[in-house]
Image 1 (cartoon, chains in turn green, yellow):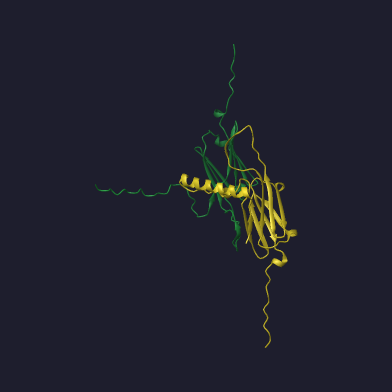
Image 2: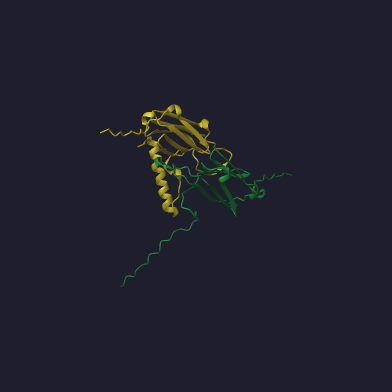
Length: 132
Length: 150
């Protein structure tokens, strides 16, 4: 009996979107709250600004991107480095039906607050039950 | 070098987060970059650097106001205290709750003594920057080398 050489499947990298430049990108921590009329997303994105935050919503995909300006020491290195400085990026698949035209956002103290209003159709409606 | 004091629970959290991170990266297929992975939910990560005149400390404190932060400088020790208030609402359902809340207290031993009177701190877009001028005796001094007349 001959032993057949079992071909090991080639290890392939999982495809994912990558930035074109090799600068670290970080996942912001988020809270996502559901209210009767909207979804609210709170994202910790310190060091960016209202102008540098880019929000895209298309076909239920929500993309958050915050550009962060370089603020690393220029001449010397760090004496202690516990975090890296880079852009913030995160993508979500939103299953709720969102009224894209009414999406609004604020940026305050390093936190992005995003309001995703639900369309009228999905808002809970109380149905009155009549008695004769 | 800078000595970093961490209390017991802090190290446990750090270990646990690191385990989570390894687990996630092994099973998700690609590593996830979570910057707060090393620390307890609210304890901020801090970067420290220095130039000839100053020592700088920077921390990311999103959602905090100046009133929520307390800074103490004594000799060569810097303390950053603060609290991020929990704004948990009862009426809503949380799909995700990753942003921690609570108080933190971190103490650092700086590489040199600083002039506590002249320390300045700014908080902008959730980034706290502390500029600490070095104490005069800690500044590098240029020594003139004289040539003796022959």
